[in-house]
Length: 91
Image 1: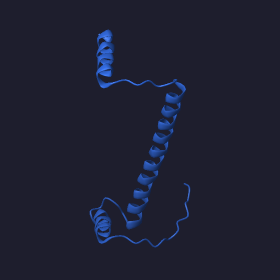
Image 2: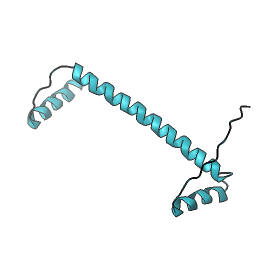
Image 3: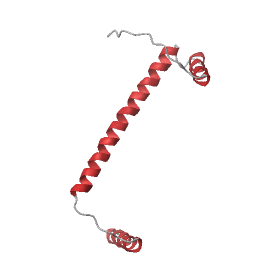
Image 4: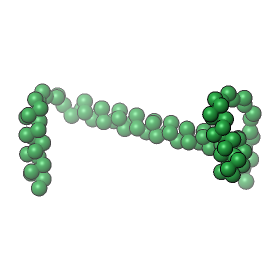
């Protein structure tokens, strides 16, 4: 089993956050305050990774849009008519 060294940090929390943290431990969901914080950090890391992936996806879509050629001006009625015609052609 891999042993991970732990470091102690001082963190300031709001009263509400302290109550939430202590409630999670008292309810038995977590064994300690540290376990709650580590779980919260894991979730934060996952969210950061998802944001990174989403940003990469958006950059790809932007680059594909640029590579697709020159845009064109279309008024709302024309666009709606084209979309309806496309939907009809699909069945």
